[in-house]
Amino acid sequence: MRLIILYIVFILLTGCQTSRFIGSQTSKKARSIVNSWNCRESNGLIYSVELNTLSETDNLYSVNNFHFLGNDINAILKINGDKIDIPEQNLALANMTVKGDGFINKKQNMISINYYFSDGADLDTITAVYSLDKRNNS
Image (cartoon, rainbow, N blue to C red; front, side):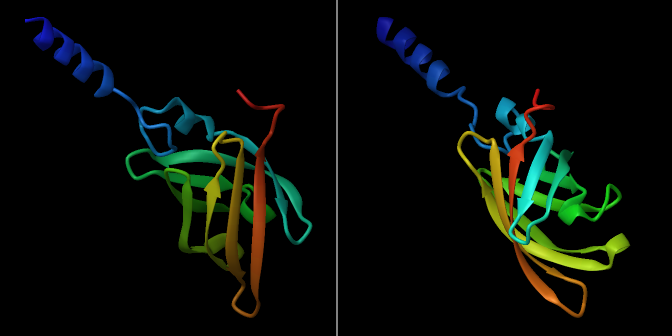
């Protein structure tokens, strides 16, 4: 009887762990990326962005003010664990196409993304590093 009770307790303790990665609907850390971030791009641009949840079930997030194009311009990110995918998309109001990938560090206070950015004539390769805006970090 003791063995059965110990086995049940063991199953309950090990079977209820939540994922520590972004994209888990139950993870507090997943919600921590929905915040204001400071961005520094490889081309010298420095600006702020807002990361917001679009769909927790699909791990989709929007980046407001992507590539310093204005608050009406949002790029879509798909985040799975610590990996980020920027599916190819047209940023309609800016008439730009973007595609890329990146990662989130383990402390989830830094995001690094590499993306290709095209206006139809030129193709730029950009590395952007987002760090949490400590003034608005909740």
